[in-house]
Image 1 (spheres, one colour):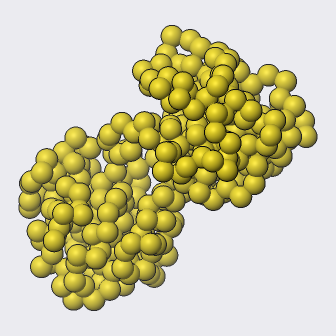
Image 2 (image 1 turned 120 degrees about the horizontal axis):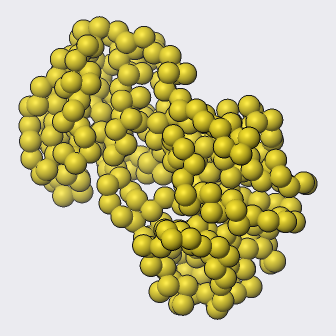
Length: 352
């Protein structure tokens, strides 16, 4: 009965008796349809990643929300919260601090996560606002239970990381790639952008929007779309466009899932991890499916860590590519649409 659940959800399943006749909020990094296995008065799922929202919209029972914050009057009606701890510890703290500022006192709170994620520090992190104790340990996961006894005074600006690079001002919320500084791969990608004459540009996995802002500040007549899977990135990107006085379209999308047009240039510094595990499949999708979203003269520019071996993908599906720039740790690949061995009408989505 529980074979479709991952290790963290299996732990929750073993304490399902606590949720009968309760008004439950399930939030955090929820990878499976755990809500279908619980019996409760009502269940609400809230996620901050677009791919998870799509998954739960199609597979889970209850109300599904794609947002970082829920209205305080809504949260007050919940008497149980199940939070799936994220691999990013700061993001989990951010999420839970917001919940602690709005939940009714004595709300039952369950925190579940893999031991390698930092969840075992939660007792000390939140001890000013709620009591927590570990009630179950299995499958290399820990489950904590507690009740909140004090409100946290939440101010969004306390969670932003702020920095300036090349006269670009960046504000980032927890969970956004490049949260506290510009990473080496992004710098190399930006250094590769010279004399852009392409009119329509897509910044895929835009994060804080720093690459988009650089393009809009330094090149003329650009129609730019920035997209990201994470709601915190979308919020950060909108703020950064505003404070840097540039304009572009910003949308939520799981890679190309919400992209409706074609582009002269697709640029990306993509993530290559899913939660705590390595994910080459995402890189494969970005490269192969880009052909469907490039104009006939369009090109893809992707920066990757040298440790990621994409030669099997390139040699199988790409006739020719250029290493535009590289350093000791990163490589920028440029692939033109005309060099894809399979035209978009023949590209089998299952091969991606």
